[in-house]
Length: 124
Length: 148
Picture 1 (tube, each protein chain N blue to C red):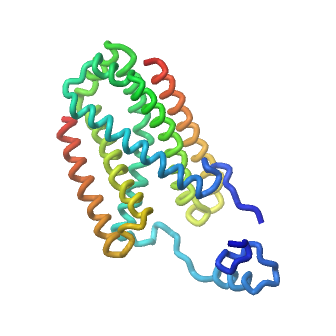
Picture 2 (cartoon, chains in turn blue, brown):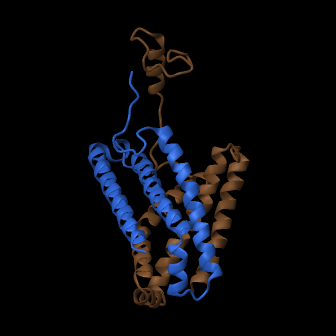
């Protein structure tokens, strides 16, 4: 007996996906709180302040980490949701090709987001 | 634990093993996984809203990454973005994305706490689901006031 792996899931098995989802969630949660904290404590934000904040090495590393975490988190999360709802039980025979197509679309969008974001962070 | 331990499902049991037949009988039991007929208690509602918020955030990411680029490209593009965010529709989009983040964040903490074994009783889960909804509703209103 071999373990059944899914070609479309990020971690290739549930345990990896589970850990990836939680670890990236913590990164994203802390990043969200940090950014909101900055916005709330800096009313009437100017370009100079914003650029200085985002171009510090701390924020460059943190933003890149958050961006990659977002990519992994979205991939795992959308995979779980699509495998739960786009099923043969719900939709019949069309479900499998439809699910693969939707997952492919989400994964493509995720990769585009990550590349787009890296390019922005690279240019600061 | 060895693979043929009785506590492990008998995927690799020989075909004459009684356990195969036990599983075959089990699989005949009626199941209802049809989400259109399943009743949604509060914890289930909190969970599915977390999923909906996640999908909404994913769509909102396009706006956010575009905004990130515009805010950091140059002083002109930063000020242009600030001007755009003065309009009602952009403010509404920003507030909706923030609402998605807030709900997904608060409900995500619920999931992490439940992973650690807290709030798993019927009463605890119900109280936790209500807390998630109340706390995020308050924060979403606060975010709306902050955006406008």
